[in-house]
Length: 363
Image (tube, rainbow, N blue to C red):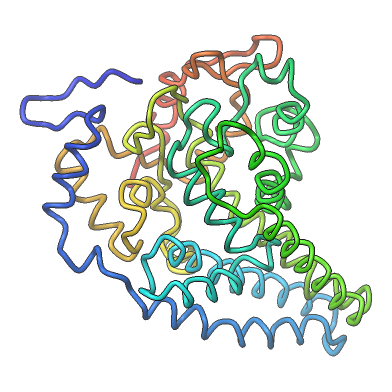
């Protein structure tokens, strides 16, 4: 873990328990209460998505209009998924049934069931974000790339690998990660602590896939392309331009999860923050997963007051460029990123300095 050198009175980043406790003390009590209005908005967007799906797949409009509708539909579906993400962290409703309902409408377009999401993201990822061998979403190490087929595939898909696949993978990466956890990771010994009925979730996932295939068959090839396939690809891409910058530019660790060193946020355009319900504030989400992102800007402000160095926020476009410029494998200790043969290599601290350099002025 990066050593913290903090001025007197500043709570160091490598003391996450104390830093979290102080942040909880200074945040208003309502920030830790569910925000059901966000869930109502998300459920209200479902019929909007249905109308857009019909418009895109009906054959009524010219191709260029269908492309535009597909893009708008993808953003609506993504927004619902992001609020479903909040709901399954208990930040929206108090009712588990309503959480699951929102999970179904939010994640089934991406072929992920609420049960799989709770296991993959809430339990596995959030208990060990960017922790070596314990985070299902972490970049592989060089030794794993040499010995494991899954690590080779993950590396080929990852930006920075140089593979042609890495330049198109954002259009399906999120859905692929969900399937990877369901069919591969969930059976591994390091995820024994994760509670999931694998057979049930696998059956439900296959049924969801068959349902979308049947709908696409009824729509016909062009209708399915505009109403189902393109929104899925664009939605995956939209999610991944955030997800890939949250952890894959940072050092990895063998210790317990510490969001003050293992997770970053991005400073993006205000319109994107509005459309994507503050999902750019990802470090803040990892600090308090059950806190609504509605309060994430305030949490960032308080964190910077307590320890400005612990707040990791990088310009969105600059972070995306760096993803493709740095190599995509970790060294054994997680403190260096390197190529399969060991070159090129860049220390995580050097990468962090580049992200925070003169051209990367944080908001």
